[in-house]
Structure formats: C-alpha cells, structure tokens
Image (cartoon, rainbow, N blue to C red):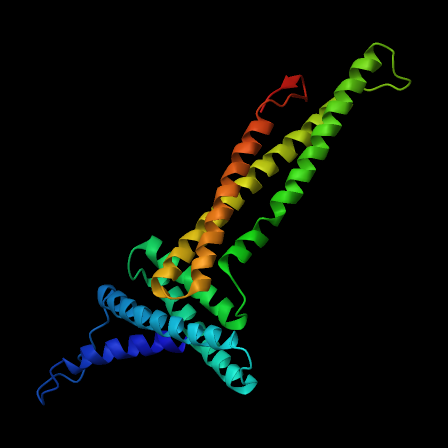
Length: 260
C-alpha cells in the first residue's frame, strides 16, 4: 500500500525533524517510534481527505457519463481517474479501519462507502439499492425450498395416517415421516436466516445511501437511491414478519411431534 507507507514515512519524518541533531548528540541514539495515537490521527486525516477526493472524482465521472453526446475519450479519462482515486481511497479507508483511526462503526461505514464508490467508478450505473436487491435473491430460493418441504411434510403426514388405516396401497413408516420433518426443519431455518440477512442487507444499503446523500446532496440519483433503499427495507421487514408467522405453527415428526 503506497498510501500507507507515505503516511508512516511522513509521520516519522515529522518526529525525526523534532529531534536534537546537535554535534554532541550520541550517534547511537535511536529514532523515536511513531506512537499508535499519532499514527491513528495521521491516518484519520488522510482518510478524510482521500474520501473527499474520491467523492469528487466519482461524481465528476458519473455526471459526465450521463451527458448526451459525450466525448468517449474524455469520458474514459474521467473514468480512469475516478477508478484510480477510488482504489486509493478504498485502500486508505481499510487501513484506517485496521489501525483503529476512530470509532469502529464509523470506520466500517467509511470502508463500505469507499467500496461502493469504487464499484460506481467501474460501473456508473451501480446503485446501492440494486446491490441490496441482488443480495436478496437467495431468500426467494429459500422460500421456494421451504414451500416444497412444507408441502412434502404435509403429504407424508397424510400418507402415514392413511397407511396406518390401510387406506393406502403402500406403507409409510415413521422413518419416512421423520425424514420429511427433518427436511422441513432445515428449510425453515434457512428461510428464517435468509430473510434476516436480506433485511440486514437493505438496512446497511440505506445507511450507506444516507451517508452518500450527505456528501453528494445535489445528486438526484443519490436521493432516488435513498428512497429505493427505504422501500426495500420496508418490504424486507415485512418479509421477516411473514416468515415468522408462516413458520411459527409448523408441526413435523422426527422421534415424535415437534414444533419450532
């Protein structure tokens, strides 16, 4: 990380320049090390400047990219500059997070935002709402898996009852019923987990979008992104409630009737 090395070298130089280099100074005197507090403060300042530069570079590129009849060569230059600045910023924010140059939650937010800026520098159409929506795709698959397992479990319970009453031309055993129950339990747990993860993804996207709107208050697209994330989080929250309701009254069999 060139930026990291530059920060450390600059801080060391400041300390070394303050030392007494008089003629009677002992040759074996060691340089004063950079304290963790000084390093964290220096990195924090560098991270703030780096973020500001990245926001400016990316917004300039995104703004020019949507201009009709834009010059492709100029647009390419804007993009390459934005990518370079955004990459440097992402590295800086990760280092700031590593050295603890501030509140951990704030540092994590700045790092996630830097990652988003880099994504947008590479793809000007990248949006936080779109990213959150893609992360929500596994929930749909988990829901279908749960519905299939639930239908299968209900059918096996029905078949077992009919088999015991000799109303079925085949035998359904407690083991069959147990296997269907285990599959339903696994599907239920996955469905619950995915729904919670989807809600968390939307909540994080909204948090980053709101932060983005503070740094790019005049961007209509950023405002639209905030609104889309708000809608996404609302739907995801309703989905979690739905999952809880749907899975709360399940009954399956393993070694006997069971409930979640």
